[in-house]
Each structure stands twice: as C-alpha cells, then as structure tokens.
Length: 248
Ligand SMILES: C[S@@+](CC[C@H](N)C(=O)[O-])C[C@H]1O[C@@H](n2cnc3c(N)ncnc32)[C@H](O)[C@@H]1O
Image (cartoon, rainbow, N blue to C red; front, side):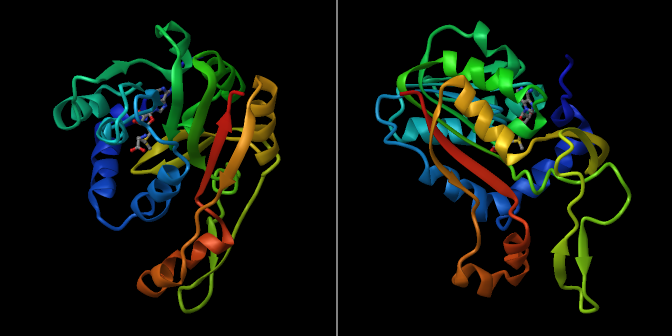
C-alpha cells in the first residue's frame, strides 16, 4: 500500500513549520510534556524514533545520555531540517516509511513515535514490527491523535458546536465506530489520516505481545487555563492519546 507523504507538500510543510515555530501550540503545552513524562532514564539507551520529523526529540535523547538514536521519516523535507538543525554523530536519519522498519539492522531499548501513527494505515502490522525491533525489557512510547479527534465522518458538518459568544459547547463526533481513512483540510485539502477506536489501539498492542503500562490524555491545569482559557476544549475532546508499553 502506498503511504501518503503530505509533509513533502510545499504548502503543507510551510503551514506546519509556522505552527510548530509558534511558542504557544498544543504540542508544546500538552503533547511534549506528556510524552517526556513517559520516557525512562535514557542513559546508554539505543533508541528508534518513528516519524522523527525535524529530529528535535532525537537530539534531546542524545543530550539526555542516549548512546545511539535512529530517526526514521518518510519526508525528505522534514529530514533536511533534521540534518541541518539537529545532527549529532550518535544520530542516524533514515528516509523511509516506518512500515519498513524490519529492514533496519539491530534491535532497540526504546522505540518512540510522536504524532505520526495516525498517518499509518496498518497499525496492527506496524506494532508487530515494532515488537520485533525491540530488545526484551524494552519500552515503546508513542503519541497519536486521540481517537475522539480522528472520529469525524467524511461529512460536511462542523467539528464543534459553538454558543452565541463563540465558546465551544461540545465536539461533534461522528462515525466513531467506522474505522479507516479520513480526509480533511489542514493547510491543504486531501490530508489523509486513519481513525481507530481505543479498543483497536489497545488490542493491537496486546496481540503483538506488549504490556500496557500507562495511557494518558493530557489536559490543562488551572494555571494553564487561566493563561489560555481556549484550551478548556480539551475537557470536551482530548487532542492526544499517549501510551507506554513494555516488551516484558
Ligand atoms: C506531526 S509530524 C511529527 C514529527 C515529530 N515526531 C515531532 O513530534 O515533532 C509527523 C511526522 O511523521 C512522518 N510520517 C508520516 N507518515 C509516515 C510514515 N508512514 N513513515 C514514516 N514517517 C511518517 C511525517 O513525515 C512527519 O515528519
């Protein structure tokens, strides 16, 4: 099956880069702190990062003592930035779809992925490959869009219902139980992601042999809400799901 490589689309890439360059965005406020909180001590670890993007996590892992990091990404444009801004002798960047990680040599103490799995159609197959690429006792830590966020129908109604003061009242969820491809407009039309139910995510991990240690759906605390009240919408519908699973 052919993977979509939307991050190499010029307009998409520019929009995404601008979003990530903003100091205040949901990644910086919620996803990254939650992701880091699930990581073990990285000293001496060999790490595989799937959908590594600009390589910011890869370089941070080395700074935290990792012995070796392999960053995989399907996008040449993302890896160009990684090579320019986040290179290090302990890091190897590989331009390939993560669905082919069986072709990478060796096994890893830690496999991570931040916000890339919702672009992957065959999650079940991917999780089995990840398990095979891990050393016994290794950890698998990943984030993805929440199944409540990917649960929109391929239909025309708005994602939110608002009140007359422009406040989000509730998320309009549709077709939660219809798994598979979704097409949306994010910087450009025709961005493909894949929706899976919570139970499918959990069952794929369990079927591959993983033990789930922790799942988290980051929410704003009172201090954050005071500064950025608009993020109250995460209480209606979380943006992210994060998982730490172990190969016992
Ligand atoms: C939202 S970005 C996240 C980048 C980085 N992990 C981070 O958190 O900053 C998703 C990344 O996944 C990559 N990606 C999407 N589908 C992929 C696939 N099938 N194989 C490898 N990389 C993929 C994209 O090219 C992009 O760099």
